[in-house]
Image (cartoon, rainbow, N blue to C red; front, side, top):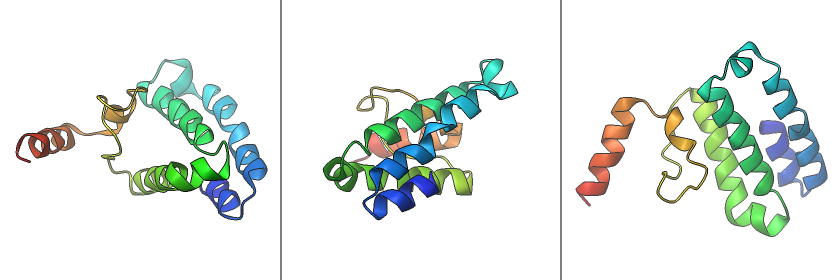
Length: 113
């Protein structure tokens, strides 16, 4: 993700895509993916979403940059993300990264607004 972001920041979306190209294949070859691990499936979906948000510079600048930075932050800190929710995110994979306490906090924040 970081390599892809670096290339995108330089305006080189071709290189950004290339740095992500082998990730799904590499991921699919892991033991976790072969046993149907939900987190591996979510990461695969996240990689597809990142690529879609790097389709062109306008999309990257309007939503891709924020999305990939959030992903990098979540993965590097091994923390849950509040990026999106299943009501607005059609992929539905965001929740697998959330601990139960994070789900409770997000739910509470929606009801106390």
